[in-house]
Image (cartoon, rainbow, N blue to C red; front, side, top):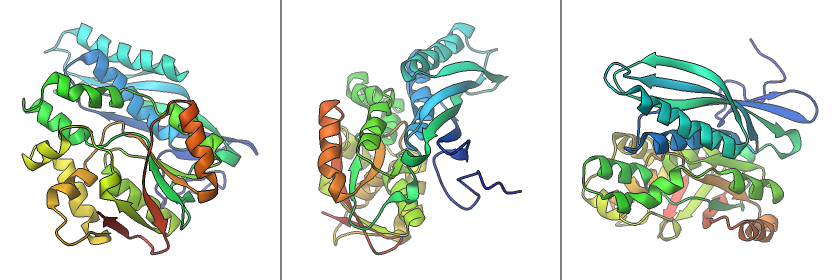
Length: 312
C-alpha cells in the first residue's frame, strides 16, 4: 500500500516517519526505548525521553504528543523505581513542550523505557538525511563516546564523577540545536545514536548520494573515551557498527583500530549531525553563538558517493 502523502516511503532511511498533513505541515512519528545506561531511575527516564525526542528534532520538528513505552520487572523491583523513571520522562517532556498522554507497560525481566512520539514540522524547513550537497560542511552538536563510557561505568572502571559529563549530555534535549539549524536554512540532518557517528554519516551519504571526509583530530570526545577504548571497555554495538562501515571507510596509513571504534561508538541521545552549505556557515555559527549551543566542524561532504574518508 502506498500513499503520496507519505514522505518517507519504504527503502529510504529517515529518523522519523513523515506524513504530509497539508501544504504547510508535516506530521512526524517515531519510537525508541532501551535498557538503563545509569543507575538513577529518574535520570534514566530523562535520558530515554531526550533520546526519543531527538528523532523529531533531527527532522526539524517539535514534539507534540508522546506515549510511554515501559517494560519493568515489577515483581522484583519496587514500583516507586518505575514511577521515578516515568517521572524523569514526564519532566523532560514538559521541558520539550510535549504532552505524555498515556502508554503501555509490560512485566519484563529487565527494565526498558522510552517513548512513541508524534511531532510536527513545516514543509519548507523539513530536515532530511538526503539533504546534504557536495561542499557542505559537517557540524556535530554533542561530543562522542557515551557507549564506551557507559560500558566502562557498568564494569566499575569509571567513576560517577568521570561519567557525569556524558550523563548530562545524554539528558539534554537537541531542541536548541534544531532551532539553530532551522534558522540557518539547513536541509540535511540526522542525529547520532545507535549506529554511531560513522553509521549515521553513511546513512546521510547514501540518501544524498554523496561522500564525506572527516578529520579525526576534529572529532569531540568526552574525557576518558580513548583510555577506555584502549582497555577494551567497548559495547557490542560499537564493534558491530565498525564491522558494518569498514567496507565504506578509508583511513590514513597507521590509523589505529581503537580510533575507528571511537568514531563508530554506539551513542545514546547523541547530537545532531548537520550538513551546512558554505553560504550558511556564518549564519549557523551566529545562531549557535547567540543560543550558547556548542558545535564542532568535523569535515565536509564530497562528490564521491557513499564513501567516508577519515583524515588525521
